Image (cartoon, rainbow, N blue to C red):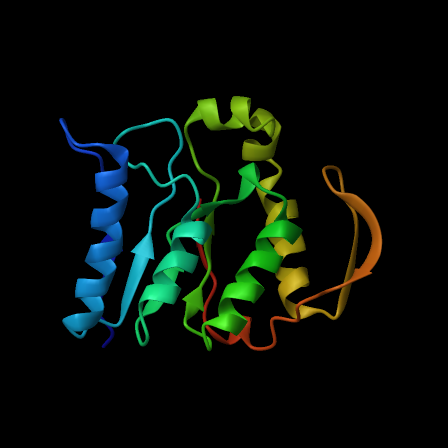
Length: 174
């Protein structure tokens, strides 16, 4: 059995954002020191109960501060980012960490995210399958093109190649 912990990066009353983020980093360090197998990072926007706006960015910090523990996103909000950009970032983290990165994606939920990031309600309601398909193709294939409703581009090479990223499970929450 593998045991991990979920890191929310919550900002409590009277606490600054920096303190909440530093506590999140320290939580991951203590998890590794305690022998846990992994940490999972939440991503939230515009709310104090979770002040990490990019689980992938915080994962990069934690992968640099730890040596053994797996670090994963729980979740990266797929409608808010281009699937190819997220795939590139995931591949980079996976390769540079020696395979310790796990990618988890989800639809998200707060409507303000959809408004601010310009993805809109359609991306939430019907665009997730297209985005997930494009992300998975990016992580599996040597070159990818898109001809969907939301994403259209000619075939391009996948660089960096993620190699065995999908050997570790991709998590999804909808």
